[in-house]
Length: 416
Ligand SMILES: Cc1ncc(COP(=O)(O)O)c(C=O)c1O
Image 1: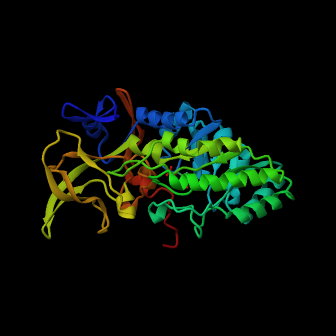
Image 2: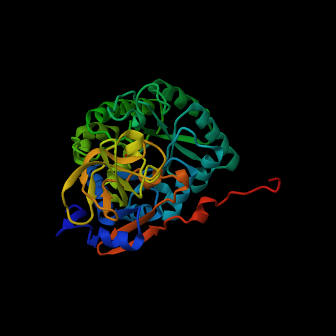
């Protein structure tokens, strides 16, 4: 059963009417379903059945502590890209042995923090990073376990902003450079090269780019082994797409079936690090209509959530379905816009939307990934509340910000 469903006329998250949450927690508010997180995690985990594997959650998709804690409790690992995400992951209770750390710009402080926690793998993205890691590990008497992130130069056919595995992108290193880095590691004292990593992009809706890239990366695993490296891990990245509108998507099982023989042949532990697939469908953004307005022959629903709460429509022209949390009434052609002073501030444009009245609550669907985690305080707007539902229980898992949060850390110096 879909965890966001109608009972009678009323939209529910699991057993809780979303209107109840809007009434007591207020809007805008993100609402996450524990059962949906579990279902998508399990689907991935089961898809890899028969292979030694670990499903990681990409914390950038949704770093809320309750979401991370839920995933840690299911047995997931975590993919991080900053010291802040490492901090969250540790606070949420992830085993450091299940932490993989990617990112092109890890600072020395971040490398040190990862070494200090003895994380499973640094996914190294450049010669300079490798050099820093060796030096830091040397100075602090640690060992750095490393996977080389390769750029397999495939076209994942997704939005250009979320495509990462093509030649000329800032991510990873080309296969030839990976081999050169590996040779350099032979002269290092504190770095163990034990993995190969790739991540080709996000919201990928066809298995072919995975197949092509996994074959290239698997060939690198073989080559590194033949050069004497004990390659134990192969991280195939994240990127599995979800259905926002009418995209043809494919399941975790279809993904793994397409690449299973190649994965098996590597005789490695397979890691995947999905964000959107695990959390995207597990969350909605509740927003209230503040005003209705007509302008230039168009109808606008002005909502209390805007691009600072959910950036995806403005940034990627992304589509999110919009539903009334109350009874499904008639539809009208309108834009759902926010209060932010930008023409690009919209949640839905030129759409058939619920014919909502002032005060009605709408749910912006599939907003559990890259929703709150990309939220900002632009226009000095307060970041929204976050709520987790489990069965018939629910709880605020992040309070709506207060005005005092907006100026926390700001100082007016004496010379003013
Ligand atoms: C290195 C890395 N791994 C995993 C992910 C998660 O991607 P997705 O949410 O599409 O699964 C990302 C997202 O950009 C990433 O950069």
